[in-house]
Amino acid sequence: MEITFEHVTHSYDANSPMANLGLDDVSLKINDKKFTAIVGQTGSGKSTLVRHINALLKPTAGKIIVGDRVITSETNNKNLKPLRKKVGMVFQFPESQLFEETVEKDIMFGPMNFGFSESEAKDAAHKMIELVGLNQDYLQKSPFDLSGGQMRRVAIAGVLASNPETIILDEPTAGLDPVGRHEIMDLFKSLQTKGKTIILITHNMDDVANYADEMAVMSQGKLVASGLPSDVFNSQKLLEDDLLTLPQSAQFAQSLAKKYFQFDKLPITIDELSAEIKQQVNGD
Amino acid sequence: MNKLIMGRYLPGDSLIYQLDPRGKFLLTFYFVGIVFFANNVASYVFLMAFVLFAVYLSKINFGFFIKGLRPIFWLILFTVLLQLFFTPSSHPIWHWGFLTLSKESMVIASYIFVRFVLIIFISTLLTLTTTPIEISDSIESILKPLKKVNFPVTQVALMLSIALRFVPLLVDETTKIMDAQRARGVDFGEGGLIKRIKSFVPILIPLFVSSFSIAYDLAIAMESRGYKDGEGRSKYRVLKWSKRDNVTVLVMLAVTIILLFIRSY
Ligand SMILES: Nc1ncnc2c1ncn2[C@@H]1O[C@H](COP(=O)(O)OP(=O)(O)OP(=O)(O)O)[C@@H](O)[C@H]1O
Ligand SMILES: [Mg+2]
View: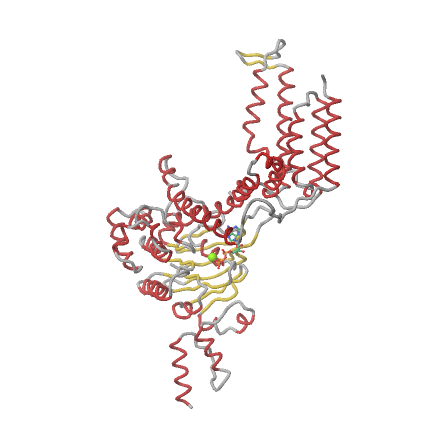
């Protein structure tokens, strides 16, 4: 589903003296079936931005077009289920949404709300638990007996189980070990190749470089850049203003560039970096 | 939601804001007490004039005080109507069955109404200009003499301020959890009663779990920073009684004396 933000402004506590702008006139297009990363400092409005996509927040001004739905400040709270079925969302701290007696029931909760039959939901739970890297034994455990990382995987499974077309991930790998992080990121990438649209909020620039097709940079409620990661990471201005840091490969290339090497465009992944080095070494 | 539970403190600066919260707290209760001495038109007008003057000094928009009336609007209406129609009288202007309306009942009903307004305005003035934490500090300070009889004043005060600190945390947590469950297809406030009650289970359980873990973390954090109650703890927020507060007490005394003169006996 294509998602378009048109001049979206969101003000928290709009009518009080303490009003603060969470989003300030953001216009952005998120393409269908792409992997889009959203980055920006703490408090820059990333979470606020994505909450508009399934109408958990409504804009104070402007509109969001999600597939055939339009969300404005007037959108009412009824009849949002079809939208929320299509747009799945994994929250920043998904472990705080677990509540059922067993992991299985917790994963089934979303699908059942969206009208799956019990057996369909059960099937989904059995499939998803493997997908997020836990085995079937976990299904009968209490979600409260799991470690933080395991809870996170269960929560992710609970969102994927409803089979949403678009999946929003708000820092889904925070607190996972490095191997676990790669597994989960690979999972999201593979979901994308199966036709899902992925929107990922992250502070990890290597994940952006390795997995994202497109990226957007937020700062103080404003969208300051968007486009291909290779272009955005090469924007001198963003780097100078400290709105962005470079992935490790690009940092490495920058150091290399101080001696002997020369890069027209900073490589952002290991593969690009090694290809570039090879070429320059052999070329000499 | 936030504003509803958060107390209604409104950041600002004026004479009323600067008064010592202990004084404000006690004088507010005192004023609510003396409101019951008023018993004729002159005394009510006098008290009203005093309250409006205090409101004026606070420099807070009058609308906020009117809003303070809203939550108990029905209670006021009910009480006033009760007085209006059920006060027995020997000279009713109108009556129908057990309902009577008389001149006295009209007067009494309007007194009751003014009394409500006075009490609400003055307590709104306190809550708008005093942060909850200042109120809890004042309570601690006021209860201090009870230490002599081994009443755990510091613990009670600590409980109070932790409770106050927890309110916004829990509100945030609730919003977060509700959002997460909404995203999984829960519709709050839709369907029949049973369905609605059921839809709160997915909020309450995570909320319980997280409030226990917050409480646990808080206890550990306090201990690891060396918190120990009892003697000799100094205060981060020091309450200071100044000349202004003496003047306020004198003004309140004057109000009492004038009130005692103009009320009828
Ligand atoms: N419920 C709320 N009420 C009032 N202000 C809020 C609320 N949630 C967020 N804000 C404010 O909106 C701004 C953007 O917050 P947001 O949560 O979108 O940031 P973020 O980019 O997701 O940050 P992080 O990387 O820390 O998750 C911040 O200044 C924050 O203080
Ligand atoms: Mg966030």
